[in-house]
Image (cartoon, rainbow, N blue to C red; front, side):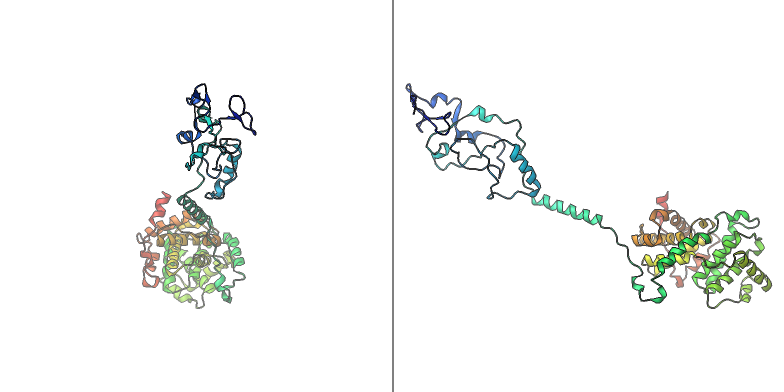
Length: 442
């Protein structure tokens, strides 16, 4: 104790403490504590009146003052408190390094010792210095996320994962592994070869300009009539597609008068029957179909001329070869098969469809049929993989086919519509065309 009656702290000689708890040291007839009550208050009162940000949980240790009488001291994370989410762990570590010492929350006073130290002395603090907020103190942050926000994040992650998952490509040959007629070991090589050779079987879409006596309308009449003849003789589908390929290839290299055009069609079907069919129609039957417009000699002479013009090359990939493969990739049912053949036979009549390759015609027919049946655009990854065509590449050709479907029952050339409007073909030509494809193009 010095002469003034003040006891100096041994640990910190700069801090002085009064010797009385009740009101300070008596000095000159007045108490020492009353002399400074205008600008100093007890710490317990200040703690209740100070308005400021709440203490950071788990960052400040809530306990009594130390022997050095510091306002507060930082402590490591208290395991008693609630756990902190991992999302904010890095931010908390950063705040521990940079944020200033936080203000303690007031303790509930148990006894009068809450405002005194362990020696029983009162501790005073400057209100003005206490209210000065540090300029570099960061704003308080929320250390915990609500259960709802965590669930929302989990749901968003699940939705994003579902969007990332791609549609698998189906192995369409797996179920035919034990079928020797399916030649699973060579099927990919076969269709790769067909794709290379189909360009040689195509003709110029402008070959009709070389003809002086026939035109596109006469060709359409001939093919429409041959489709009916093909149905009457109950021939295979391969025969029809090969017959039309022979006609176009021959007309692109040989000029024909309109009087012989029907003979060209009959001979092309005769050759296709000899190539594809087991039971071939005789020449006499073909003469009767033509209402005896030609003689047997004329039929044989045209047959010889056609074979020599085509150099006996009849092994060409037609749309039928590709449509069978693509229908398998589409995992089609009977309805899809019939509608696809209906649309592609409508395309055979039209001269403008010669600009498309056989594989593109087949893929577009299946795509247009799917749109007609399901009412929306559908082209799976499996179909795209095996056909080699994307949906955008098929859109032009498929739109034309839908237009032919709309007009199939009108006009003079209705042979295809009548053929598929029977119970044998499930009345498939009566189905409503996919109008939305036409609207999309417009």
